[in-house]
Length: 285
Ligand SMILES: C[S@@+](CC[C@H](N)C(=O)[O-])C[C@H]1O[C@@H](n2cnc3c(N)ncnc32)[C@H](O)[C@@H]1O
Image (cartoon, rainbow, N blue to C red; front, side, top):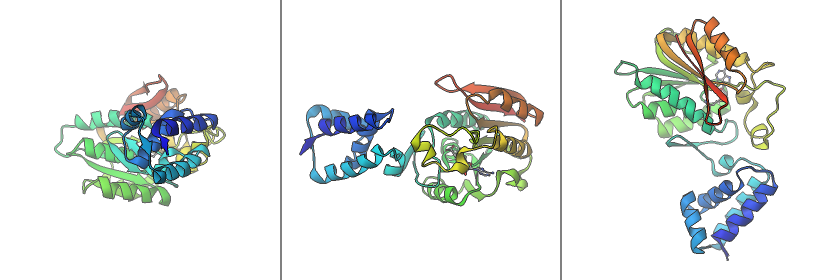
């Protein structure tokens, strides 16, 4: 037998030695996943000296070794929290990031303000369906189209939309370049988190480089290849006055504002995330 406190502390030490920045949080979340406790409950049980059952210890040992080898926690649990949702994730799809929750918020704010009984939104490059589902669930009178090009990611989007969406969410397999021509000039909000890392900039984290699909990460020599395409598509889809929200890299604000303005958008504005890094563009068609 071992106590929760002993197990969490040993796991956190091993994760820290493996170079995992969020070692303690990951240790608590992993114990929580195996036991069914929230992270707060894990902390409380550690404080109370609670012991873990042998089968729980076996599972924790197996999952702990996987996390120590830098497999993302979300791939081990099969789950990623995104705003109020818990999405299914795994090989072939990008794990949604906390900073994208802010991007969702800017799009939700714009969609809520549309003076229509059923405002229309499009999520280009939907991956798990994170942005599309956040919009659809937090703006309950909206209709949302989720566009994904690649088969593997599409499977995850379908799974999440089947489980968490309803008939207001439509998943479409298409290249964002020519997707949804039938909606040209009618969409109220387009949101997107395109691939935007320059090809030569390999991410330092093993969790990203080894597990997120390249098709979700890399955006050509300057990182702007897909951004240019997705901006052109947003310009085509949006109605006059429609709002565009695009996530980008932390040194791409000026370039992205210039591309948006050249493409016919007004009021191109760069927003920063909680770490004061350039994170997203908003602009009006
Ligand atoms: C950075 S990921 C974002 C995924 C999800 N929207 C999120 O925020 O977690 C970019 C997504 O765009 C998809 N994608 C890349 N190029 C695309 C294209 N030309 N048309 C449609 N989807 C594309 C990728 O497969 C991937 O799912």
